[in-house]
Image (cartoon, rainbow over all chains, first blue to last red; front, top):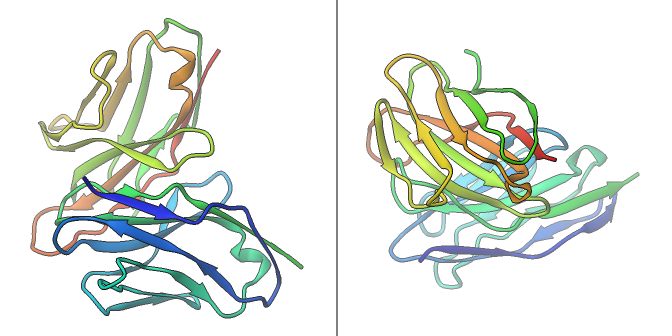
Amino acid sequence: GNSVTQMEGPVTLSEEAFLTINCTYTATGYPSLFWYVQYPGEGLQLLLKATKADDKGSNKGFEATYRKETTSFHLEKGSVQVSDSAVYFCALTRAAGNKLTFGGGTRVLVKP
Amino acid sequence: NAGVMQNPRHLVRRRGQEARLRCSPMKGHSHVYWYRQLPEEGLKFMVYLQKENIIDESGMPKERFSAEFPKEGPSILRIQQVVRGDSAAYFCASSPLGGGGYNEQFFGPGTRLTVL
């Protein structure tokens, strides 16, 4: 079956530091890949996505590249802010209208 | 355009009671998904519905849990005879009808169920 593995947190950083959250997946065929962010007490918001190999998703300074050869979709941001403190989830779906399979989430805490 | 709405936001039940969670999808969306987030864990898929149809319920526990999405009104996730292990955040997501490719799922704020 499909699965997503992401690095465990918490990840604690200082403001303006570089952030990387690793994500690898197992799936048949060509899944679409996503990063969602969950701020405290809220639902999930789509941060970025990529639907085919070598696509790069980007939003709000975050980037992730769909690497089929390594089955990875690592999230990066060059300079984090306190407001980036949240839980980040990597996810995949195999087809349109299909369920999302999530990783366990990585809590990120950015200190001023 | 209002987002996905869920109510109640917080629900407290005693063991053995019933819990009803409601989800109103975004306007124009006819696909609804329910996910459960146990404490300190990721979200796990429960069920996928379209209007009046259950499309995929592979993530639903075999007993006590049911879901519906009637022609009129919100989608309902119903948990009968709740147990402490049902305590979790339940998220609903909706996506627009049809088309090829990926239809983004938009998430509601969740209902946090606490079973005493």
